[in-house]
Image (tube, rainbow over all chains, first blue to last red; front, side):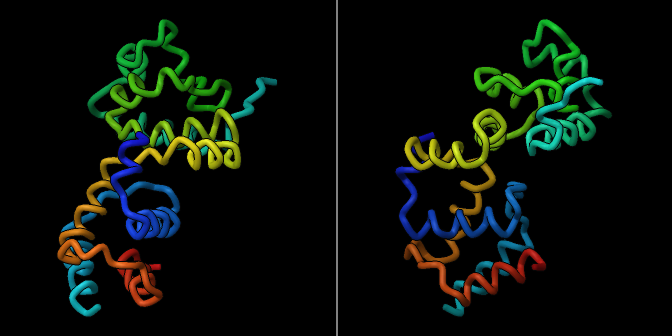
Length: 45
Length: 133
């Protein structure tokens, strides 16, 4: 478990914390639609 | 009256949900057996909050419930020590990252072309929109 944490960057940990907050700790997996939207966001940045 | 000290824990609610979801393919008796509980009533007791899930039982219970062990461990730590103490433990020992979370991280890496992007206010707003929040 600790190893998994260590391989995440500080930025990735911030994304993870935000995802946990937004999903209220329900641990949903990424769906195709969500991945498509995510890619669109990243392209715009 | 039966005492149910863990009735409102997120773990009790989650296990109740998983037992229900697995009902068409697996009985509660089978779940208890797969998790290695000598007493099949133990699943009922965890589900209704009479008993807590022992931390050493998390791997076999996750397997029996066909769920992510890291997620179940997080909920079990919260139930066993309380949310604040669980946060302190996580800060020291590291956060259990679930397979779904690893999936999200992988998608973020690929979508950003492995540039390790910071989470900005704009990306927060966009993620909220993705989840309809």
